[in-house]
Image (cartoon, rainbow, N blue to C red; front, top):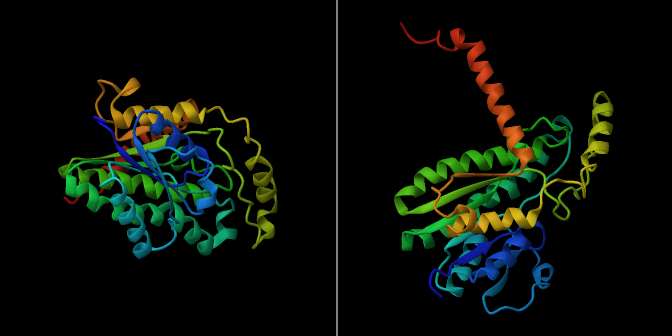
Length: 284
């Protein structure tokens, strides 16, 4: 098929990944759908353009490279890589400590790095490709109690994606950083709050955070099917993306827009209020 793309999508057992798999197939593309546990994606109907593959983004550099190289042989390459696999570990920062932060970064950041680095040689060989990274508006609004670990990992992914876009531009490989707000995806708030190291001074904050953390479940404003349809449109240059320039950032959701505008306004206000101090440190 003319223009048919080969997608490799991580974390397709539920949420954005499951929907993106179905939508890409519906548009005539081929999809290598992956998950940490293969049995969790066997619910997809059999399809000639669908290949299911086990891939644990925590497996380590060597194992991930082996799995991605295998995926690239299925249909002779990878045109679109979607880094979707990830999760949140709710806890207060001092209580969770470095061990919880390392667990959070292992999946949400280093998993993305390893999967990207395994797929990029196949894209550079063809001098063409698209890397999609599913970020979060939490990188712009990290103040939500309990989301510090998740927000930090997503902020790291955001800055890495910006650097990657610059480095890959000479090879005609594009990067799309998707920044969704709150969407009604399965299990997004399902991971239990870590209370393994309770500090009495934080009892009130912890209790408040645990109560409020799961309140949005089932009430999120975002429709994940609409969001992933837009991602497919942008990657293929069709629908709402037809005739538009390639966007490095793809913000999805009114709540995400509000949070990003508020953060930008906050930083700009600081630059205005402290401009004399900011500009007063040059030599001479």
